[in-house]
Structures are given as structure tokens and as C-alpha cells.
Length: 506
Image (cartoon, rainbow, N blue to C red; front, top):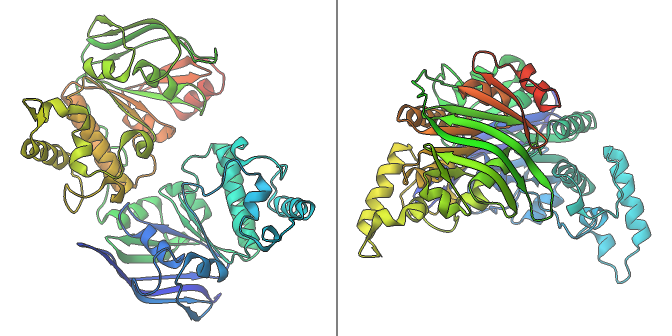
């Protein structure tokens, strides 16, 4: 057996009012890809922040050994100097700088009085060639796709002589093609002896890539197993502490013939004159889950942001809500008409991270918690408490800052905020992106509850199993048009992909 490249023994970390890690043990062998799995809030990120020096020695109990030697990191730099690099979901690159500048930012080559740019570009090209990245080192980072930026971030880590590479949800924003490139790169790095810790909610990736899997639950180590001894179902069971009989708990429910939303010949042109929605017509019935599928850039999100009044530009066509023609110019108009929109980017557009749960929850429905045009704080807290209990929110208290919550619980706050308005139509854009299987399951149950109450749900998702598993009917988009429509019974991944990639089913 290969020796351990990393051992973390009895790691305990406490924050005010909560024990985030409780005597966690985590061991990784040299040159393996080791997946770290668990629900949001299980302690994965906290454990990695300890390893990477974000939480310095002295702020936690326990012992860290690298190649059998104890280390006590007091800063991120000390961790990096020991060969540990972490790549977060939110990339740490400077967009206005070139690829070369980003690769060697802070490096000795950039600290001289006169920078030898020829040497920096040559060194950058050497590293890019080694990774297999066909990029000019002088290209600005903000001109690259997210996938290529991710690979630049990994290249940057390797220039620091990284022995242990940590990737936190690296494929959350990548296309399928970029995911394949990344996975091939990690397999190549494994052959070169680089040890990789891979954090992901996408269990298909874990099963393909990982040599071993450690599972955390409620801040404790549950198990470490070789991948050949695991299945996706077994990983899920260990993560949540119970069996999930179905990954997608779709429930039969009555769907009214009544069209709660009808869109006719809708075209949207942005402020630059680009047509990104082209003559789209569709309807949504009361109590129906309408899945929206399509590749990145197909116009899925843009269509519904536009209908919600969130895009500048020119829109033509007609929109009916409850059979009545509407003229939505801005989100406030949409909210009055009974629409709610849960953005795919909850941190940027769905929440105010520095505010507490109560204030985030009541943001869209202040009129319901006001008396004589003044917010009634007792009523505000009572209302927030009722709706977040319905969402099964897990938090120390309603006074907790939303930015401190796990991804799944942040999403529940976003849902709570919009459900405070009792919407007729709920648009969910990537509602389970970046959250764990247990939280996904709870959100699917909430969807089931809402459609039984007659709410019309629009479910936009990049994950085909999710669309197929939860939708009553599915629309497929490509290049701003609807290219296919399928009932739940007739829809398959193959049919959807055919329509999403240029085929057409009418």
C-alpha cells in the first residue's frame, strides 16, 4: 500500500453555538483521487479550510501530518509552501490580467525590479503545454470560458509545486465538454503522483474518478471506502443516514386544464440588438411541473428572466396570466401578477448574504409584516419562523446571517422568501445546483407540495435526470427557440438531447 500523503487526526472545530467538526479522521494515500462527500453543512469545507491554513493552527484541536510529518499551518502561505493548494468553486483569478500574470502572481519572477516578460511567457507556455491547454499566455482571463478559467486555476496551483490538490465543486458551472477535459486532466495528474481531494455532489463523477471516498455527516467521519466497494445509492445512504427510496420523489397529482400562464409568439431582443428569444409560444397549467431543458446558451434562463421583467431590451408577443393579458415591464410588475423567480445564482441575485434569515425571508413581502407603514418586528419574526419551519430550514436561529448557511439551507431561504408572496407561478432556475442529495430531496418534496396546492412550477435544469424525474411535461430549447415538447411518459434523455443539439420534434 502507498504511504499516506495526508493524515488528519481527531480534528475538532467549533464556532459560536455549533461544533462544525467532531474528532474527524481523514487519511489520503499518495497519488490517489480521494473524494470527500457529505451533505452541505457536513463539515467538508471547514475541514479543507483547516488543511489549507484558512483556519490557522490553534483555532482547532487535532493533528495534521503530511508524508508522516506533523505540520502546524498558521497561514494560507504556509500551507501552500508545504505543497497544498485549494481551488474553490468561486475562482480566485484576476480577470483583467493575462493568463501568464495570473499563473505567476506573487511568484519570485514577478517580484524583480524589472520583470522579464519573455521568461514569464515562456514559463507560462511550458506549463500550459504540460496541462494540454491551447491558450495564448497573453490572453486576458476574462476572455476565457469558465471551463478554461478552471484549468488555468489548476495550472496556477501546479506552478507552486503542488503535491496535494483540493478541488471544491469544480464542475458546478462547467459544460459537459469542459467537465470531460477536467476529468482527463485529473487522471493524468494522478499518473504523475499528484494527490487530489475531490469534493462534489455529482456522484457520477465521484464513481468515475475516485479511488477512495470518505463520507462526513454532521461533522463526523462516517466511513472511508475503496470505490469498488461503493455504489451511488450506498454513498447517498451514508451521507444522509437513511435510505432515499427514490432520488426524484415525483408524486402523481391532479393537473388542471386551466392555463395559468400562456405565452404567444414571444421574441426578446437585448439592448445590443441581439435576438436571444425567437417567436416562442407555450403554456403552463395550474398544478403542473413544466421542465425546461437545453444546453448552455439555449435561451432557457433568458426566456424566463425576460418574462419576469428582468432583462433590458425590446420584447414582442403576448403573455396571459389566468387568461388575462399582462404587460410586465419590471420584476415588481411580475410579483404583483403572482410570479416568483428563483435565480440560478442565489448568492448574487437571491440573497443578501450579510443580512439575517428573517430579513431575507420577508424581503419580497414587506406589506405582509407592516402595520401603519412600519415593519412589525414581532410579526416579521413570526412570519419568517412559520415559513422556514415549513421549508425544514436548519439554522442556529433566525438571527443567523444567511452567508453562514450551507448551500441547501440558503436555497430554502430563497424559496421561503418567494413563498411568502403565495405565488401562482414559481420559476425555479437550477434549484438544486451545488446542494447535496439530502437537500435536493427536500426541495423536490416542497415542489410536490406546491403543485398539489395548484401552484404552476417551471423547472429549468441542466441535469437531465432531474428534468425527467420531476416534470409532468418537458420543453426543449435551442438557439432561443422551442425545439421539442414531450410528455412525462414519452420523454427520454436521447430525445431531449436530439432536440437540444439541433434536431427538432414537433
